[in-house]
Image (cartoon, one colour):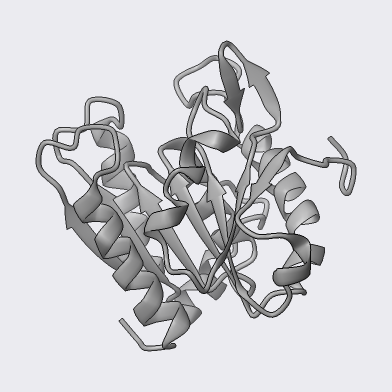
Length: 218
């Protein structure tokens, strides 16, 4: 898709007339899911946020995907760049109406969230990554990790060590990247597998309140 042509299907937590000036939290769902999936988390997030849940652009099977799986033959970093660039082209004018922009991604949605942060490090206040990963970049300059490392954006990363979906190589890459480039808060949860639980969401609520609403350092 070319810039400014993607108009995604989204769900909002509040009507348009009540959004201006509020902190924005963008929800990015996982592989083969849709915008309704993560919207169920909205009641567990701080009331001050306007929450928008975005449907990924590519229909696949029972749901939608942001790009092909990394192990698929048609995966490429160009596919990631296209998806992230389209997301930012849609989000950028919306962001100007809000006091801040935070991203929450589950599974592949965390890959999208971290990729957008790396593409626009000055524009994103924080990233919440749930049971997900970050993707390796290329030499195109699309990821501005040097700029991000100078800012050290706060990031929350929650996962279960027994997650059967996110492979060890993805976890190791994400850990190395996060340690070097963001101020990461890592929390492990037992018996959660590849999902989200109430304890994790309580921690996310606390993190967003502390970092975004109170402007505290982590």
